[in-house]
Image (cartoon, rainbow, N blue to C red; front, side, top):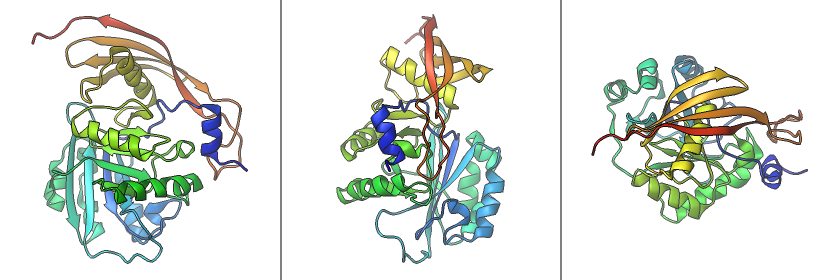
Length: 313
């Protein structure tokens, strides 16, 4: 039986506007095996995992576990763990890092403030500081959620790490298993699918310079899916690759049709009409799901510039 990623490739399913949505990412190092719901099915204390899930709910913060590329089945719990937080909203992007010997310490964060982009809670509770290293490349490798992530993601993470790329981590879940291998690049929060090592290196080089590579891009996680579709469409139309040059300022409507306003830092604005459709023919959206369905897709049906005003300078 074909895997979900093989079927998706064969059908040429578009990847735009399929990124997970989160204004802020909180990443906690946890080596060893991961279950399908890793926060409560790993070597992390499940009580801490459940409390983290509750604390993040409705705040815009998405929590994921990370581990170094390599073999994991017999990894012992480290005495000191790496922790990252990244805010991905244009105009307020940051990536901070910290270490902790007690994962429960993370529960002391103000998750609502973190979701709004306030890094002071992270710095105060965990003694965090701005991350001064390379951008992070998070490769989804959780085979318990979908075998494609293990079969395709783990070799990619290993290849990147062995070739000397810094900032590579395996991560528990990025959604869109059928686009494996999937990668999230922080701090700007652009997600990629069907990734290959050479392409990820290009993406990381661009991220280091504050640029977005559009090939294979699934969208920016700071936005919901209609906003992701609109922002990527405007980037393509305007040939704009600077990461923070564009932002979604308004979304009107509801499924299956939205009107999205995208603003440029120079004052220009675009009105983008996005319609929700289904990718056909029906098939399982994941290797772990037997029910046939048509994965939702976001189609840009109209794009028009509504002001050509540019800011002076």
